Amino acid sequence: MKSINDKLIVNLTFKTVKGNVVTRRCILYNLGPHKRFKDKSQRYHFLVLKGPLYSHPVFLLPKQILKIKITDVHFNPVSYKAWKPNWFANTLWSFK
Image 1 (cartoon, rainbow, N blue to C red):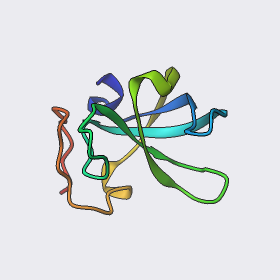
Image 2: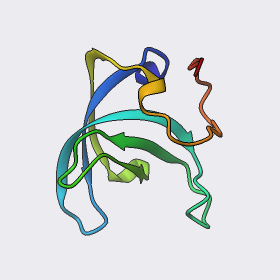
Image 3: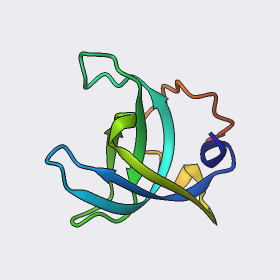
Image 4: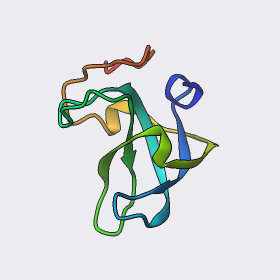
């Protein structure tokens, strides 16, 4: 929640669905179920800033996350919001 509320980029190490371990710079923007998944499991919603191909969202179960390191690099949510927010996390973000 600190990275969400303080608008800080994180270095995230996680296991992919295929079992690969990867580390990426990300923005954590929400925590809760995602409409894409029928099971309604709590997931961490990240925006990967520079993946192998492009920036993209990932929705990870807690068991997939190996390490989250909060950086001291701030971001502006307005620069990354390309969708209408439906927050589960108690975020303090403003998009004005």
